[in-house]
Picture 1 (cartoon, helix red, strand yellow):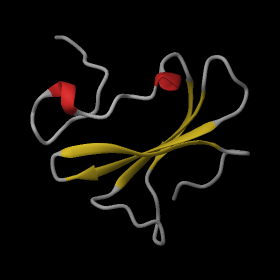
Picture 2 (picture 1 turned 180 degrees about the vertical axis):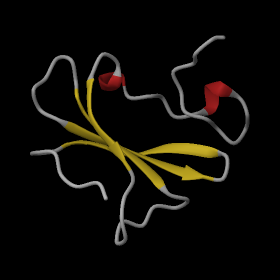
Picture 3 (picture 1 turned 90 degrees about the vertical axis):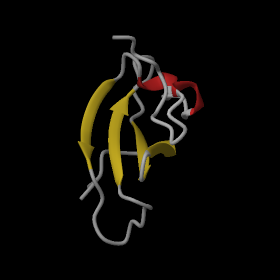
Amino acid sequence: MNLIERLPSRSGDPQDGDRVPRRLFGATILRIGTFGEGFNLRGGGLGIEYRPADSELPRRLILEFDEREMHVYSDEAISSSSNLD
């Protein structure tokens, strides 16, 4: 099985999807979860808090789902690990 470093795309062509953020490779995963009310993502979302291999500053990656696609909604530094739910 060939792992392609992109997110799923509606077209079915793996090369059409968003790239997986490079900072995620080799990172330490701190928390994975979803979001509660008040955080309105189309189709739902997945949050991954992580620390890149070359940094002490944690980041939060938010993936948004839409029928057959997944998009990077946000990938930003955070001051501290906070509630996802």
